[in-house]
Length: 484
Image (tube, rainbow, N blue to C red; front, top):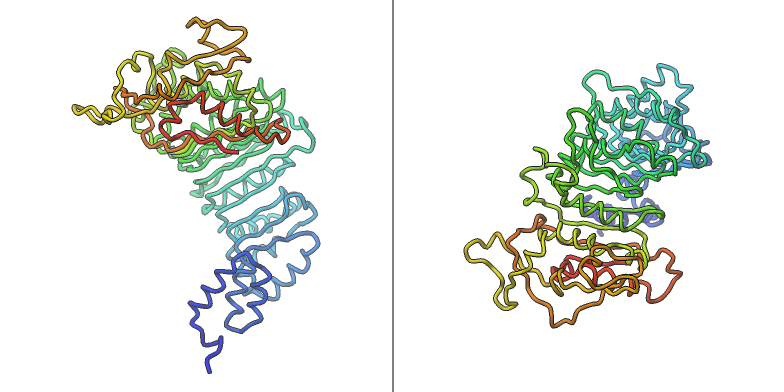
């Protein structure tokens, strides 16, 4: 009579794989049959969370069972459990450890002997992903020295959290950062930095000289600014510029908007715009609670299509990329309400659409194609595209108690102005001789309407309607998405 022990190991592995993340069921499977035990253990111990309360038991288990130790790939030390201090000798018993999530001082860096420091470097040599909370800056050079010895490291996340707002001064965030020795250099694929913006200064001093971001594919800069930080030199731009040649996904906070130029620094191209990112596919824009949507949208329009008058001529790196951008997804999470949108000038909305759709002047709206004709230029089909619009920008209507209907008054929209939607019968298909600079763009997503909405049932409906009224051409192209 067949039994569970007769099942092929491939089927046992498949069964256990279906229970991934279900700790209770995996424990039960470990008791069903000896053939299920090693597979269940591999799943149960692939990720281990160590706290001050279970640290002793964890050490005993690892010391008594090398097999279980070999199953551990991710070690999670709660980032706020500062009393959880591991011995270096314990870490050396984890030969397959590749992922580490921890607080800033999990091994008591200050009291390590030279021998322990060397053993720690060997234990961390196979790390590919590290997520660390930095709330005490003196540990940052220790982490830099350790990670410099991890040639396999590709993913780094640093969360900076000062013990009380504003306690980190300029001197605090300027510790001497160690550089790699020998042939071991970092080549990160993903970098995620969040929390206090002051952490950008020492991280840049560590990563930039060794060109650790030269092959970066994902960059997240979700940092917070205090009042005194707004006047300090911006440290985001050097990190972005260092990764722009290879970056595929960029998440950037715009409170405040990041400058697009490094000014007069020598040997540095003056612009950082979308055309400088030949591999960028996804761009996420996030804002803090004090950010202004008007400033963020103006920054975005400039980033997507800079004007020579404002920022100077394009650099050699930018030339050749503009019409061949592979940007696919663009999202704006501003945490806004509808009244924030009313404060955005009409020219800003227009500039954003022009940057994305490649239509820059009102003269380009003069020629229309019939809806049924397809709007394709037989002589050069690649140089035109169809856009369903409510009306050309020259006929966009504004109503305001404080503005007139003259063309001059529509160049900026006062806070109280609202758009007057045009009748659906005016919808036409626009044929433009200017090709879109972003032919692969699939979605422009607006989110974050909930700020100060106080649970109003119709808050999202009004927010969505307001956004769509201001970006009619993107609506017609099926690109615009508004989400809760």
